[in-house]
Image (cartoon, rainbow, N blue to C red; front, side, top):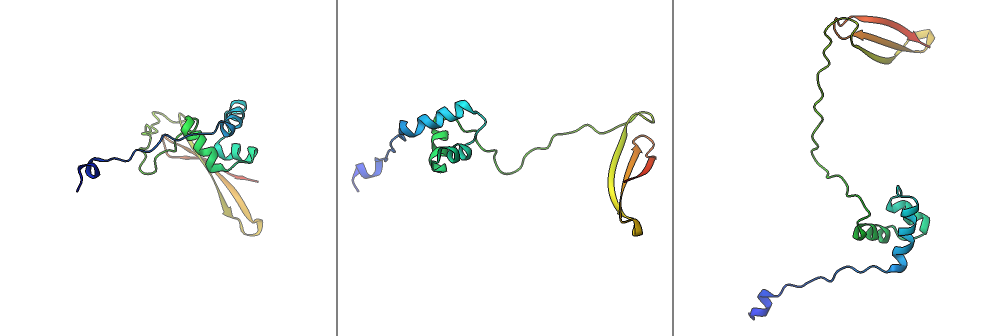
Length: 122
């Protein structure tokens, strides 16, 4: 085998962008910075893949979040030191027979675990 075949590494040319395509995209995102590549492509009538490639090569696109495990925020436990310091609420719907569906609001004291109020909501 020739030595050249073993050591040869093909190099890829740097991607080239046509200024005729880049200029209207840049003008639109300077006018409305919150637009993404899909919105820009729709407004300009361009192919969305072309617009996305322009965004990526120019560094105008935010990378997507990695798929997979994401750490959860460690929240502090809800600890009440005395009654009426912290309450918890919930709203649920229950079948009331002849009256139909009723909404039931529950309010619980986090210290004593006592239900403070059972009020049907109409």
